[in-house]
Length: 305
Image (cartoon, rainbow, N blue to C red; front, top):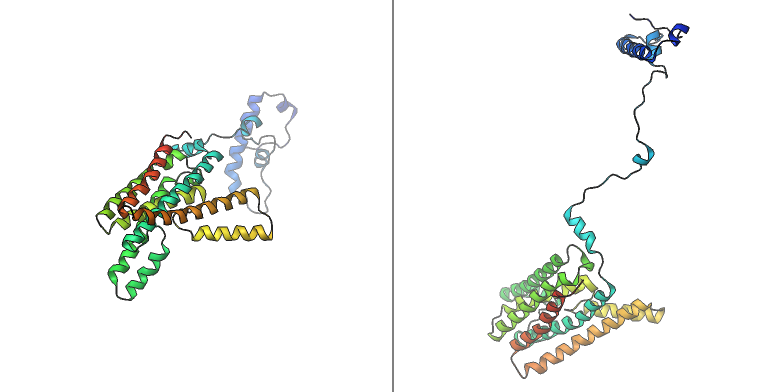
């Protein structure tokens, strides 16, 4: 065995750095070979003591503080980069979509009243079909029951299309990105009007799908509903009660005003559908209701975000 002195002599101190490094390496090898055979309680050999000396301990290289603090680049997918580039839409675009909701609410009210006049069915809110469907099925009127459940399914599909259109940015979806769905809903309303004029009962499914598309879009973009008034009346009551018991902030006052406008527009649509149906067919009323919807979609298609 190679024996290494724990105290270097004067001659060793005068040797070159190269000889010292060689000695440290040999001692380390010796220590590693004999350390496994050192029994508990035995004093380590001189070679082992030298190998563990701080003089011969190697240190791992470290990066400079400026380099260590530098953030490492992260790879970003194309979808994440696109979503980050879009950003939130402007407040003006938000208000514009609220005003569009007034027009869409009027169109849905016209169609809902028209189908009620001709087919004794509603297609823009699902409270009626969801009540009559199980009721008819339980009473043995299977055809009527499945028809009402089919209306719910068609409305659900329309909402699904709206969800797909706003999937990436939710309420901050650019106006231009919502335009194709609005145009498609308008075309479906026009198609349902042609079918209603020919007394095709399945036109109710087409109209319900269009209503779901429009209601889904406005729900996502503005939180307002344009196919039924249950939520509208609820929010109106809550805000009026808050105004009586406390104070309404400017944003809540504006919301209450929008809700009142939507409620009034829904009433106007119901009356107008009755007056128009006395001068033309119900199918034509539905087709005319699709015109402002299609025009809004075309306007959005060329909107600069």
